[in-house]
Length: 396
Image 1 (spheres, helix red, strand yellow):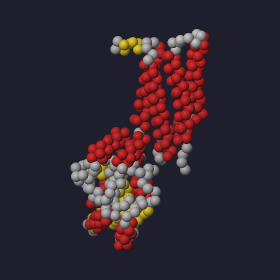
Image 2 (cartoon, one colour):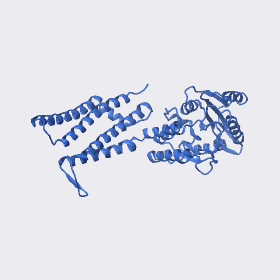
Image 3 (tube, one colour):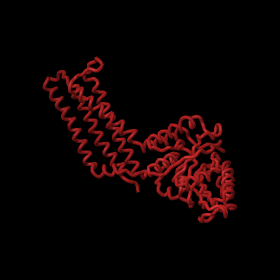
Image 4 (cartoon, rainbow, N blue to C red):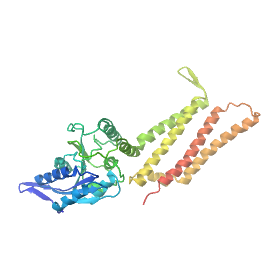
């Protein structure tokens, strides 16, 4: 293996060349690996770059490992790592942890990315950026290199959501060609094992206030069979994005529904009023009740997602810490119990009035809707609090 000492490109070049780790996850890439190796070694020789190539095999059943082993005999800077846990993310986490370079360049081993771009990525890091992400949609994409759904639906939609929710000016969050410094990587806590690892890295880098930039890159037809699962992998990315944006997805809609439901129920309970010339009686209260219940559940979902992110995905949230400090499980159960008891009292009053009327007809629909709503809210509070407490248990 080459040494960690930086090298200069020539006597007339005062720019110190960084020591670079190129990390390639590999699952049955016997056709693409030789092309990738040849390209990387050519760039390293031409630019006088001190590079190590780390291939992380993730369960290949073809000749991928033999190719790497044979090449490592001639080039000691080619290193084979084995990751038994299946997944794009698990392979990358293994390779990134093993990387010894000052800078790390990441790419797939299917020859879709042009390793001639390595110096451009490193230059951006030398300029002070913490992370550099490639943009395949910059006009240099080879025809038919990406499926219609990936090119025009999946990637644009998910990238737009990340830009909207996390204020990241990246237009291709799923691009596999990216670079970051080893120091920057050490500040990230990454957990996801699948394809959503690509989204997690960028989102957590943004939350850590990394300086992130993107550069246009070429993208070619892959060599070998694709491992992507359009719908399952797309859902993995979407699920992670939603998990890290609960305020937009859950809290705001939940508060709006809850407030609308509560105000409309109060107005309808106090008296009938007309809307566009139509007199509203008790019937719209069912919609009000539904809005209250759904809104309250969405507010709980906000807590579920944030607590899971903190306790299981290494995120930090002061609001959640304060929530557990001041709102204990016992207090939440007590609150839910009070709400549930209030509903029981209303039901009891209605029942007593019904008995007093010799089991005759009663006009208690409004009170029944209120009592039902309180009962559901009380039960939601108790059960939701237990769930929050369970999610709040940190993994070792």
